[in-house]
Length: 218
Ligand code: URA
Image 1 (cartoon, helix red, strand yellow):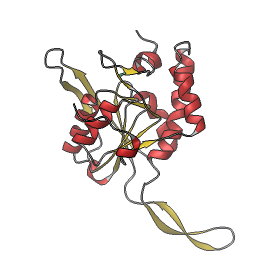
Image 2: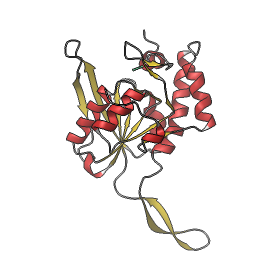
Image 3: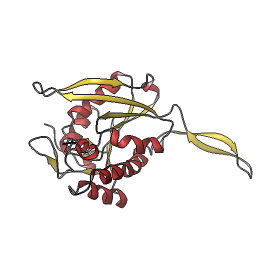
Image 4: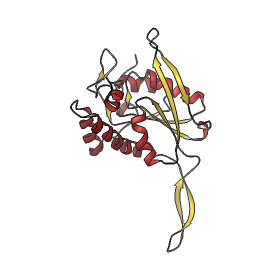
């Protein structure tokens, strides 16, 4: 296992410490929070995290006419964003991101863990064909061991993606270290770097199983 990491030792990790993000995250962590409230908060927090994750999208100037005069003004450059949800919990972040970037193309990657090898196995992959030309925002609320997140990024790179950002709600130091080792070019944006993983691979203090919390399953 690699060295744990901190925001200071990893310039590729952005911790979004905005008070609104931290407040919403606390409500989401609390086990008494209902499924409906959890889902609503996840949508709200995804807007705030997405704002930060997309801060470095490239701009270009275009000429427009305001009611007063002609001017050069910035617009997003190049092809539209591709957003890739890592199933199933990534879907909880998707609606909010699509509100920020309504023209984004959307892909889905499904992975499960083989109980014998403990390695992630792909069961679904449908992504835009021109990933190489687009900034890609990969969504998964929990960066825990990093195994499935790294496998998803492997897959996106196999499909041509070159500019990948990884958006999560919570990250464990182990997952951040694993991603940094496997994909040092991938920038991680998260609301919190939690303490550690427990023996079952859950983030602690964490918020439990993100998929179960957002979909009301157990
Ligand atoms: N996935 C989750 O949903 N929760 C964790 O704590 C770790 C992985």
